[in-house]
Every structure is written in C-alpha cells, then in structure tokens.
Image (cartoon, rainbow, N blue to C red; front, side, top):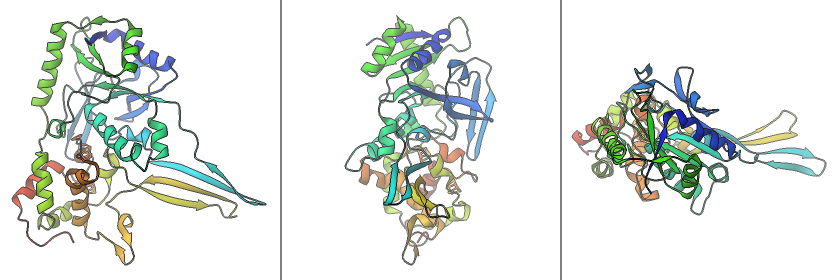
Length: 377
Ligand code: SF4
Ligand code: SF4
C-alpha cells in the first residue's frame, strides 16, 4: 500500500482519532527536565523543538533550532512502564467470619494507544510479548494491558551517541510491530513540515482511511530512504552481536569481570531502564490487625543480592558475576531461552549507568581479555 502524507498541522487529527476510539493515548512529553511517557491529551504535548544528547552516564535535554516533533531520542522510560508496570497489586484479602474474601487485581485500563514508539522499542515490545504474552506461562497483567493496544511508531532521524539499534537489527526505521509508522520530513520549513505515514495492520489502514490523506510521492519516499540512511550512518555505537554471543560463551571466566567489578556499583539502573528486562519479585504485606493482606509484584534486578538468594547465600555474590550474568543474558543466553537477542540496542543502560559502563565497550574489552580462569565467581 502506498504511504500517505500527513501534514504536520494535522498531526493532532491522528491523536484525536485515537481518543475518539476510546483509547488511553500515551506518548512522550517533556516533564521535569526529561522525556517521560505520559497521557497525551493532544499533539501539542509532544516534545516539539527538543533534542536529547546522550553519552555514557549522560542524558541532557537541549533545544533544537527547528520545530521537529520527533527530533529527540528516548528517555529512561520505555513502554514497559505501561505494559509491565514497576509495581502492581495482584490481590488483596479481607478476613471474614468464614475465612477470607480475596479480591483479584483490578481490571486492565482501557486499551492503550502508544504514540511515538521508536523502532528499538517496537522490538523490545516484541521481546516482552514473547516472554510475558505468549507460550505456556502467559502473564495476565501484561496480556491484559497489551490487548488491543494501537501502536503509532516514529522513525529515528538522529540517533543518540549511545544508540546501536542498527547493529542489533532493530532500527532505526520501524519495520514491523506497528499499526501506523511516521517519518518526519522538513521540520525546518513550516510550509513543508509533514510526515510520511505508512500502515502495518488493518487497524492502521482504517485509521489512515478516516484521515483522508494524499498519497506520498516518489520524492517523499526518496526522502524517507535518505533519513534512514543518514540515521544508520550516524549511529552512536556499534556491536557485532554474532561475535558477542560467541565471546560471552567462551569467556565465562576472565580477569575482565574483576575489572568491571571495580567500576560497577550494582545499583541496578541498567535493568530498570532496559525495555526488555522482565524480572519481578513478590511482596506480601498485612496490616497490624491481621485482617487485611495484599500481594504486590514489583520489578527486581539480577544485580541485587536477594535476586539469586538460595540456601547459603546469593548464587552470584561477586559484583563481576552479576554483571557477567546480565550481559550474558542480554547478548547470549537469551537465544537459548527465546531464540533471539535480549538487547535491542536502545543504549538506555549506557546513558543511565551512573559510572558510564557501556555494554558495547565491555564487549570490545572482553575481546582483548583472555578467557582464562579468574574473575567473577
Ligand atoms: S552496570 Fe552501571 S547501571 Fe548497571 S548495576 Fe553496574 S553501575 Fe549500575
Ligand atoms: S541491554 Fe541496554 S542497550 Fe540493550 S536493550 Fe537493554 S537497555 Fe537497551
């Protein structure tokens, strides 16, 4: 199907359609100095005229000299904030004369419209779909929140210094997993500012039909191809994912893990911001009377002691062992579990690591280290 042209002045018509369909529209907004994912009342709430500078341990919001709507890269939050919440109550119970009355988790919210999803995050959602939404152990909380979600993707034109989605085969342009994908053109010219809109599903095609848009021209499509090529050329980082997978398998023991341990604070930031990390723990609480109890689920991290605690203590006591476990899962053992990489190259773990530990640099350093005994027990 030929893509369409959505003038920038009509972007809000798309947001309004999603609202009129009863969807809970969420998108990126500038709030408290960062790009957050929040309810999106209309298109004016999007981060018009902002960009983001990202380096290891650095994330800074800066003004652009044009009116680009999607001229920024992602913040710490990903869409798992909505689909796989950081903390959720699974049930509560009240003591009664006959025992207990149990109230299950509240119903999921209205179906979401996720507006402005980047290609790396589309792939991350596909990874979480596989882990939490399909197979023999479907997570009811995730499945309920993912059901009926309408996805509006936005291609990246200017990757951050920490991005490496091209290396992971997940970006910079959206290829699947969206209902509608937008590529922004000519943000510096108010008269020409527009989006090339392509559709990926019947839902997307129905939305596009209601907007009654003109078809994109060959010149528009050539401009889209140039945007993608430019983004690939300016990708901040690279990683050879095939070599990394083999390297991690042969370097389970290496002095390099002790080197990482000297820097890593085991703060767990990298796992909290990662859009594919899915681990959780359970917390049961009761009030002092013993009449009311609740079960909560919250994100957990393989960097904490309790995560791998078994009789006798944590299975991975050394800091280097915890980093090795995390990076090995992302780039190597995820394949054995789920048949793909567990990393989509979004670079969040690099930007939000307080000491600037960089997953791509650690793989490069590991390549130089010997696979000899020592490190990370
Ligand atoms: S790698 Fe960085 S973000 Fe991750 S636990 Fe270590 S210090 Fe924290
Ligand atoms: S491991 Fe880092 S770069 Fe890869 S998906 Fe997670 S946060 Fe993004």
